[in-house]
Amino acid sequence: MLYLEEIVKIESLAKRMRISALTMGYKSGVNAVHYGGGLSAIEILACLYGGIMDVDPKNPRKEPRDIFILSKGHGVLALYTALAHTGFFPLEKLETFEQNESDLCGHPAMNVDLGIEFSSGSLGMGFSQGVGVALGYNKKCIDNHVFILLGDGELDEGSNWEAAMSAAHFKLDSLLAIVDKNSLQLDGKTNEVMSLGNLANKFSAFGFETREVDGHNVAELCKNISEMIGNRDGRPKALIANTIKGKGVSFMENKIEWHVGLLTKKLYEEAMRDLGMEVN
Image (cartoon, rainbow, N blue to C red):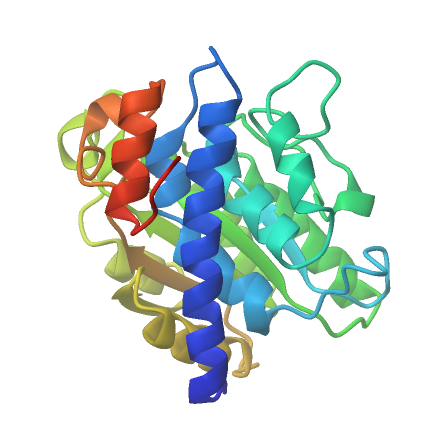
C-alpha cells in the first residue's frame, strides 16, 4: 500500500506526463497523433511506473521484474512519458517521437533497454501475449507480475476472450488486465459500435477477481491495484478503469475526433493553458 506522500508524487508525475504527452505530440510535426487514448491512460501508467511495478530503469533487463504490455498500442503517449519521467531514457528523447529512425514509434516497438517489453498495435493481441508471458514465468517458478493495458474498443476482438479463458484455466494470479474504459473508439461510441455490456460481470464470469475504479483517481487506482496483485488466490485479475478520452484538455475530452488528430500551435497553447501552463 502506498502512503499519502507517494500518492502526491504520483499525481505530480501524472501532471508532468500529460504536459510531456501533448508537447511530444505537437513537436512531432505534421504527423497525426493518437491523443485521446494516450491522455486517458496517463494516471494508470503513472501509478504503475511511479510506485507499483518492480522495474529498474538502470537495469531494465533484470530478473525477476514486472512486465507491462501496452495492448492498446496507440496509447504510446502514456507509455513513453512514463518511461521517460521514471528514468528509462532522457526526457529529451521524447522530442524524437515519430521522427525518422526514432525508437519512439507511433506504436511501441520492442526495445527492452528502453523499457518497451513488447511490440503492439494489432489490437486484441496484447492479452494473449500477457497470458503466455505469465504462464512462462509461472513454469519457471519466478514470482513477478504481468500487467496488460487494454482498450475497451479492442475488446471487440474475440482473441481477448480466449486469452481471458486461458488465464483463468491456468490460474494465472500474477496477471492483471487493466481496461482503459473511455467509452470511445475510432468508429464511435463503444456501446454503439459493439456493446460490451457489464465488463466487470463479464470478467467475473470468466473467473477473474474484478474491480471497477475511477481511472483518473490516483489514490483509488493505486489502492486497488496494490490489493489485487497482493491477492494470490489462483484467480487472474481485471481492473475496469473508467476514464475520459482526451482527459485534461477541454476541447479533446470525450471527442471522437481526437482519437487521432493534429495539434496546431494555437490549439497546443490552449491545451497547455488547460493544464496550467503558459507557452512563450
